[in-house]
Image (cartoon, rainbow, N blue to C red):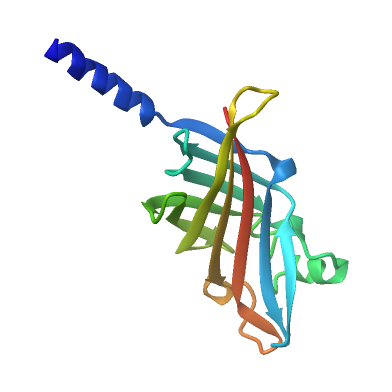
Length: 186
């Protein structure tokens, strides 16, 4: 009897900690950023083309992300500015068509929050970054009958550390990231 209970407990624990693959629902996800302009205002932008997959359990509190972003998809609602951002002055999209992020570790910070550390590669430079994460909820999708997780990731990076543009009084060095994701379990 004791042996059967131990085996049952082992099976139960392995089911609870089972990891599965999740992918971003692009229609309900956005990779956004904000930068200070002229020290008096902020300009928002986002990247329209990206691939995001994660490995996580059913509560999505332990995600490990693999992200690829098409740098030429930068969009600030201003074609002239977007063209400048794509040039060699900033993203240099011809030489660096993608930026990537890979999770290196996760630290749970609350019931539905975590701190995620990972390596961001942008403009050919890889640096560690930290993002704060919040799981907004996990539901069973009525159509697919699979789990969907909603979450928000935030953080700040220094663009000049990645060689994206130079220091300037006109454009802030710190970039605030806000990433809203709807992830679908596969």
